[in-house]
Length: 103
Image 1 (cartoon, rainbow, N blue to C red):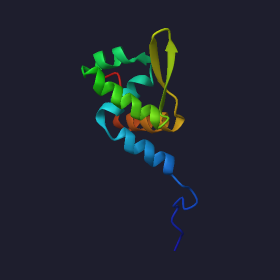
Image 2 (spheres, rainbow, N blue to C red; image 1 turned 120 degrees about the horizontal axis):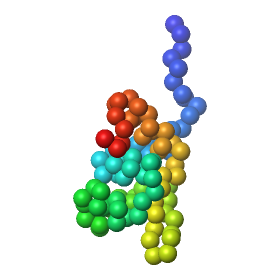
Image 3 (cartoon, rainbow, N blue to C red; image 1 turned 180 degrees about the horizontal axis):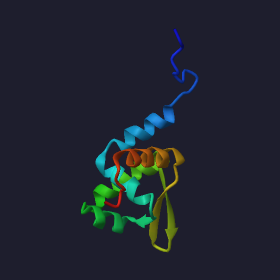
């Protein structure tokens, strides 16, 4: 019998952490939106129609897991996706579902 192609030498710790964080619909929406453009927190909470405190909590978790980073411009912070693993996971998900995050 042929050997199964399991990746027994790979850890997948980073990938599983990303999947856990992206398992929340709000965080997934934030990452999907930030893949196309960087945004400040005000624009994110206005687009998602959520309280600023809620969005800030989700942004803090995404930042803590190194999925996004913030770039300060004056008094504003603009967020962008910086994790190539997260970008690949979200892109693969949207490719498989036949729609784009903008829909």
